[in-house]
Amino acid sequence: SRPRLAFLFPGQGAQYAGMAMGLYEREPVFRRALDACAEVLDDLLETRLLSVLHPSAGGELIDETRYTQPALFAVEYALAELWASWGIRAEFACGHSVGEYVAACVAGVFSLEDALRLIARRAELMGGLPAGGAMAAVLGEHDRVAEAIAPYAGTVAIAAVNAPRSVTIAGEGEAVGDALRELESRGIAVRRLDVSHAFHSPLVDPILPELERAAAQVEHSAPALQLASNLTGRLFELGEGPEAGYWRAHARNPVRFAGCMAAMSETG
Image (cartoon, rainbow, N blue to C red; front, side):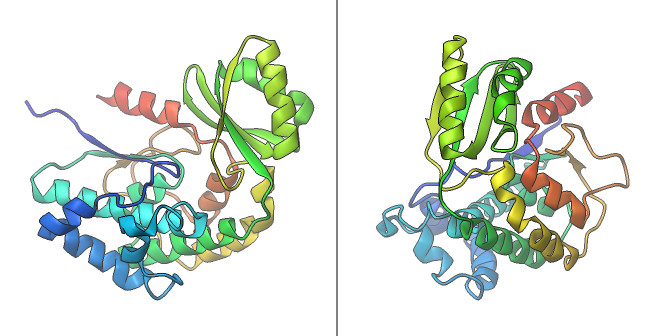
């Protein structure tokens, strides 16, 4: 019997200078898919995609949000195309934050060109937010973390629930620092993350209306694969899928990745 497979697409933080360039040189399928992405993105980005990805960029551009998100999308999409060319096909698609855009595209929710234009606009909007945000990984249960950061509501939020005892918080830098000291006083281990902005926190609120407008210009279809939702931590029901308003909430609310993994596991 064949195992039931899922393609998982990581989010921001997984990038590095030179990622997948060996595949680009050796694998024609991967190269064609990445070139197809570059053809669209090169009209939307100030610097060409391959220049951003190349190791000579030194990581400077690849770590800027406006380039990170479209670059991750392009590499992850090309990887999915490469696996499919080898006969490795998934029944499920799941992403983490930005990765869900790739998962949705691979599942047929929107076309490659529409997906690239949407992710490039999202990256531009997020990259234009003021600096001063912070994020941190917290090794604690959701409820304990939520209780500890409750005094900082409005400035700090739970940004992701990655596992039963792995939570990410995000928000205004000074408030995040205060929240981390409170968590440590309760014996909860924490680690600051190297990020440019506080994703999935109140600090992204100013861009949400424009992100929804951009998403409304994209034609959405029901997914052809079983697509996991970061927003609910569940699989979309048959015949249902994300719409424009979904991507607004998706950018602001916590990434319920642990729920997505559990939902896929329960389905086999």
